[in-house]
Length: 337
Image (cartoon, rainbow, N blue to C red):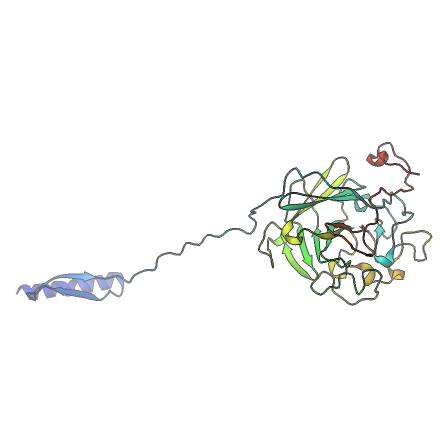
């Protein structure tokens, strides 16, 4: 009788559970050695333990350049055009461009590079660029760049490329780093124009600050930019020493014209007749398709026995210019003829 009552109770409980909770787990009867069923145990399907994933945002930085940068090395001077076509400094055949002018020959001092220098600490190289103007956030939208050659052949291996807006704090969000995968950033020869050349210049994006992605190098801190204006605007780059190692050449570019890294060097992609000239006495005056751009010679660091490289800086002396004196100009401390 007891067994029958227990059986009916078991069936009743099972039906109630099935109606209220859906399909019921398989019941298991546990018997004592006497053969009397004493209880029913309902089992549940085991659930996997939750997976805990730690997501580190790509915008988090492991290292930041110094707020106060080390003392700079010697200044490298560029020709200053100073509101008129420079009397020298633009040599299109060897890609020395002194063209801080629009196509109507309006002078843009924020494009005009005056000096640059390199300093370093344990982890970083710092490149400081002095401009003739005081507004790198000019409405033209000026890109500033650092070309880096790891060899001694005048072909750039990396281009650190920044676009506005420029802020006084270190930023990566406006910086990209490109490399040249097939050794054509200077066309066929770095010592002459190869126009019209069919290449692709700096063709590989290795760091993309604007989208917080680091494509080939898993380093969110590879390259930075900032600006100050005391007394002239200074655009300053910082990049990891791991990018270059201890020895390299570098040059500076300011560009509000083509801004096309796939066509570096510009003199390899455009004939001088279509590029134009900033010199009034020049055959191809005024400027054509290659306008609003200024670049410098290349300075060598920790390199010796370089031989002849057309882009290599020959002197660190301040160049002269025909710019008239201006009592309000910070550059009035320099001597002019």
